[in-house]
Image: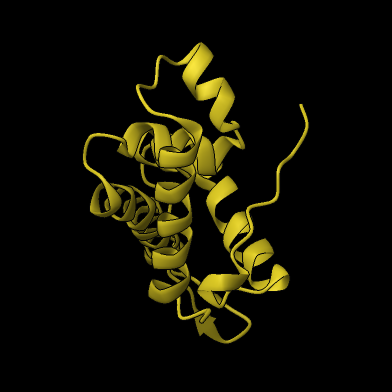
Length: 135
């Protein structure tokens, strides 16, 4: 499928900044899967023995990583809802899976025109850029 680049220069988002935001968003499905896997597994064993003179806590480290993934996933979901509660599922599908607007309309029964939805998607990218302190 052809990838479309969203023009965000008028929002002060350069091509490089967009690539950073885009990279963050397309990790969403991967992070959701990792969260589900991590939360379904039992706790890793911990011997309490020092490693290289330090006591490590793999459970705490794993918990910090999972918490960061959850924070990233929630940021995308909350920002999509902030842009438009009704269109949030389609915004998330578009920005996390690179689904073009025309496909959302034809294949996912999105009740909007390309122009209306493209504006909402640009607003989403702008808010993510602000929240992640990229601009």
